[in-house]
Image 1: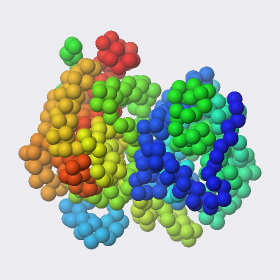
Image 2 (image 1 turned 90 degrees about the vertical axis):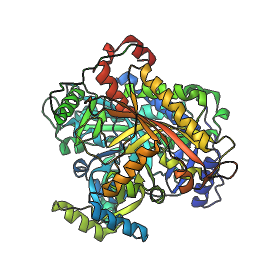
Image 3 (image 1 turned 180 degrees about the vertical axis):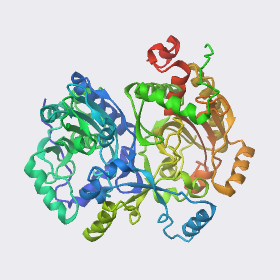
Image 4 (image 1 turned 45 degrees about the horizontal axis):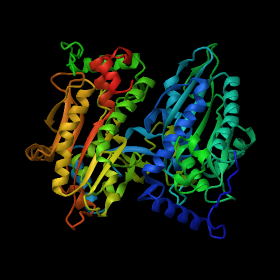
Length: 315
Length: 315
């Protein structure tokens, strides 16, 4: 595979300006449709086709593992959300779904506030669901109980929500991940993580994306978050595949490989066949970010991409 | 095409019991995965494959119209939500996304409430987005301005949220619709609605689903809602394709054809080429409901479905 030399925009420009420039180009080519909210976009025909084809490539890469294929919607049980520490570690990223549970009188009151352009949403009641912050979270509560011998391998794909409005087109508030999850013994989980650490790089390289695996640096919240960040770095549990999109100094993670230890096994009482608390690991491919990296690396028109990349993606 | 005689469960049982029975079967076959919230399910391999193939059938049926293909995520701009009357007509179905915007001190307070098992969500702030209640809503604000001559035809697919927890497996809180939308003159919009009123029935019939088109009966909220319901019936603007799933007396809508008059054109200042306010119409196929109707009509194992149905669906 050749190495592609990418133009990451005018590096003399400030970062915010480079974000705007790339976003303007993506909009001009019809790849993203602005909706008036930073990080929330419609997807154009071509952008969606690129995502679909890369998604298929991940499916083919995973095929030798013969994973179960499951799909979860973009919301999940609030009670399950409360068991995964997200409220401690990433409260600023959460999406809590609220709704109207009143009668005619409360409705009139709410409409009154709405018409006076006041905040009409403050008396809404929490619904039974939260936005899904990571594609694999709904899998664990549905796996409570004892795993079959050899554990499980599961293929997931769907939308995740993270409330982090940004001018960076690669930092979306709602985006899709294709994930392969392993549930089993510590050895099985760790082997999965390491298998995909190597295979993930191969998958990206096959479409001309020269990613670098780095130890992850998740945005843990607040003062306590600094400790969490140090622990994450120390434990070497999570790696990200990064590549420059708008910036060489601040490359973007377009995938990650994460060994969760027994975090989810303990939270949702998942056991291996011999009764031990299950461990888990997953690899995730960030589909919108991969598309953005492909357009940045090979150009905004798929027709001009290198023949070998289009062949791999059936484009 | 043959007519299929369907076993809709034991009709002597009360409706709630028949819902539970069908849901239990769907879960036993791995088609739906319970999540502890009524109407929120994971989707099994086979269920997802049926949806994907019916989705493809809709794409093929729409191909002669050469629609633009756009995709919107399951959340949209709160400011746009405020322009579409949903807060008046269906407040109880809404999903308003809230998040944590405080600092370390507010975080400690929220965690305190969380640990005392109190409502920790009440001081969250409304995010800039709402759950999308209908797949085509985000299209209209992105179409502000003047349409090309001949208007536009757009193919959409994605998740909608409606807060209506129910034991009925066909009444999901989060589900996908495949929609074909027309923006243009009143004649163009009405012709689109009528074209799909006929073609939709053909599509369903081709997979052995004998639907009946009926005037829609949307669940407008509260006392004022009675008037809205009467107006909707009188105007004959919206039709639903219904078929028995759990009940013969209360058949389920698995698709609909809706002429919106200039409702969205006026709300979002969409104009036809000659400067008039644009009219719109859409057809929507409820993908999860179609799958549930197919399993109900042909059996819970795809392998036993009639050969001709499997051929049409490439299953």
